[in-house]
Amino acid sequence: MVHSALLVAALLPIAAQAANDWNTPCFGECNWDITDGNGSGTLRLLGSQTGVSDLTTAAGWTILDCDPNVADQDIRLVCHDPDAGCDHVNQNGAEGTLVRLPTSCGSVPFALVTRMWVHQDQKIPASKRALIMRRDGSQPTVKGISLATDFAAVDPDVNGNVTLFLQGSSIPGVAGNFTVTPPTGVAAAKRGLFSWIGDTLKGLSEVHKNITGSSPINFEKDVPLFDQSFSCPQNGAVPAFSGEAKVDLNGKVDGTVSYGVAAAGSIIPPKLDEFGLFVGLDTTVTGTLGLDATLTGSISSGKIPLFETGIPGLDFPKILSIGPTFSVNAEATASLDANLNVDVDLAYTIAGAQLFFPPSSNPAGSYKPGDSNLKLSVSPNVTSHGQVAAHLIPSLAFGVDVLSGAAKATINLDVDASAGVDLSLSAVAEAATGTDGKSAGASFGGCVDVTTGLAVTAGADASLLSFFDKSTSVDLFTKTFDLFKKCFGDNPARRAYTGRAARAALMAKRDSVGCPSSLFGTAASVVEEAVPAGR
Ligand SMILES: *[C@@H]1O[C@H](CO)[C@@H](O)[C@H](O)[C@H]1NC(C)=O
Ligand SMILES: *[C@@H]1O[C@H](CO)[C@@H](O)[C@H](O)[C@H]1NC(C)=O
Ligand SMILES: *[C@@H]1O[C@H](CO)[C@@H](O)[C@H](O)[C@H]1NC(C)=O
Ligand SMILES: *[C@@H]1O[C@H](CO)[C@@H](O)[C@H](O)[C@H]1NC(C)=O
Ligand SMILES: *[C@@H]1O[C@H](CO)[C@@H](O)[C@H](O)[C@H]1NC(C)=O
Image 1: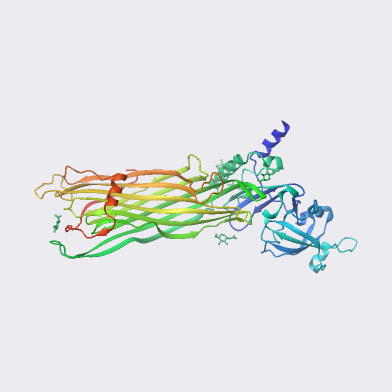
Image 2: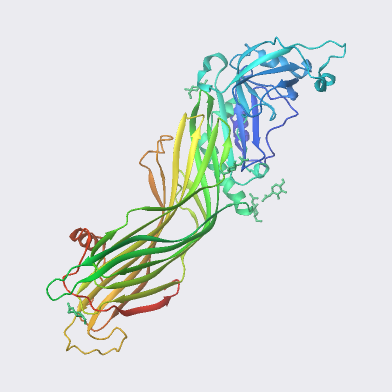
């Protein structure tokens, strides 16, 4: 009873300070904080007294020679204060002990001792002599230690497992604001891992709400997605002419992103048991899709990469690193048999979005379409069905590398902003008279239906854990907005040509762009208007 009460207490969220204390030796349990560079984070290692020790001044050690930029290396050190506990590292033999290193030594916070010996070079630099010499004037022995980071080479049966808990944020300087601390004590470490991950991510997402320091994600580019010209030969009554199908997208992404991570597992043996990532996103995604075509057929641009850049990563050296990238892709499809000019705006605002992976049921945040403009001109005297769709897809990819490759995955978050135009036109007899007096004239009629859509999807490209299946792809948010719907002219058979199946049939019918069999009339404007958000 007393036991379980203690365990519960150990797992309770309490206000945390930076966890690493350089003034106290860490024996059996060590912490490490990311305090400079990108992001912030805390790592806790829990092991046995013989498995985890300390080579910092807090444990009485002074390191003489050590390269701060290398992980695996031989170092020289002396025990300047045996009372502080230098000898702790030798319990059950120094070999195979995981040790904390001072920041001035090595590129990693923790390394394994693979050998310890009396160094043949006993020289102590003059600058360190005053600190190191014993009171009786004798000089302590200079030791040599070989450090390594191949954690898989350690036999866990010798000193037991070393458990790890890790939490990190992309925002620098907030490690002291983490509201959930890692469990402490070997027994506590065995319980409640899953809820600890969840609580940590929730705590981090709350902290992020109050703190600025997100990384910018920006993109602006006018890109041709498709451009194909044809020389159409004379075909009966249709004279030779040159045709063109051209799709371009002027896209813009303007936002900020932050993220947080929690992981639990063991460093000895190297193994990840639980992992979670949260992403905070505020962004606008805007753009204008332009299509000009005088041809008949269908166009599919495929997914076109427009842009890619790194955003600041988070690195717990040799233990866990996250290297995120921000990229933008675009895609356009069109099926047409008319002379068509379309300009349609994409406009979305994503505010305060908090997305969790593994996914939680309801991602927080607001996802709203903005004002749009629509321009549409078509040749008036053909019977035609047309479809145009464009996607602008900003993506975040989080490459995760755990324990030097013990687990690896990329977690993707795609924000797919799309706009689609469905058009149906019917040519009518010249004798038909218009009654509504629309600019489109009365000699033809039709309907146009413009929809925009936003889909936020998360996925992982490799099995990081059992629940991160390779095929995992989860829709976090999906919504279609009916932006604009209008019929014009006076054809009674007007009906927008919509639906997935109808579109697929249209795409399948023709697989490339070609010359029309009859001449299209000059495109006339049928729609030109601003469409306010929420219409
Ligand atoms: C911060 O992240 C950027 C981009 O990933 C990287 O170029 C830079 O070296 C990092 N800085 C530090 C101190 O790690
Ligand atoms: C040590 O770790 C291994 C692998 O995770 C696990 O199977 C084993 O039960 C652990 N041993 C102890 C004593 O916790
Ligand atoms: C973070 O912690 C610092 C120091 O403890 C405090 O001054 C600051 O207000 C905290 N920030 C937030 C957003 O809680
Ligand atoms: C964030 O700010 C709100 C309102 O100021 C406060 O109630 C809350 O405790 C803060 N959360 C954290 C984690 O600092
Ligand atoms: C469409 O109109 C153009 C110009 O007015 C004409 O040359 C063409 O033959 C017409 N096409 C059809 C299919 O009626």
